[in-house]
Length: 253
Image (cartoon, helix red, strand yellow):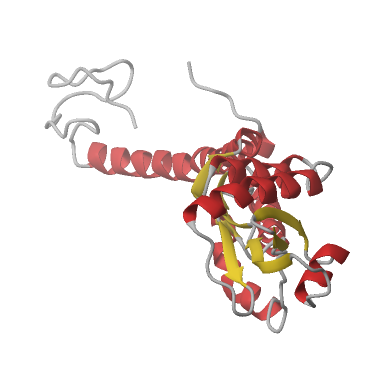
């Protein structure tokens, strides 16, 4: 049984409205962050570069100082009094070994929203003036202390920011995660685009194909040929239920 599509669904206005809304929505996603790559915003990439010209983005580096108190290593905030005293050598027996930091960088992709997000979670160490690099054993001691401090700082920052400390706790590396909520969001966007394609077919392509079929049928009947198979029907009556002797189709346009 043929589907009876509503007139508004087959209209050009419906298609233009949906495509325009999706394009502007994708552009909005593309302007949210320079680390997000929405596929539907690719046509606006030139505009994006103009819009972002001269704009700087500063990512937090989450620094912390490593203190050595007579062989016992500890971690403190870089702005703390302890680190400042150790750096200025005003605390006897405490040495500022260097600085730990991580760059909470991520890159995301999706049709519009960040469905796939790749996180780089690496803790790095920068030695202080005249100090050696941490040995693997020493780094294994201070890294969990640093991650614990980062987790405490991000405890009330929302789910997305809380992901980074959890990844830091799992070790150094790069992790790609699927955000299922945004996947559902993008599937809805995809459904709208499919609806536009169906609308274009039933509203434009299907009527055009039917028109062309009727035109070819009329031409074929005028040349005494079956519109379906091209069999010669010279001498046969057309219409009134007359069938083609070759394919069995009724001889009507």
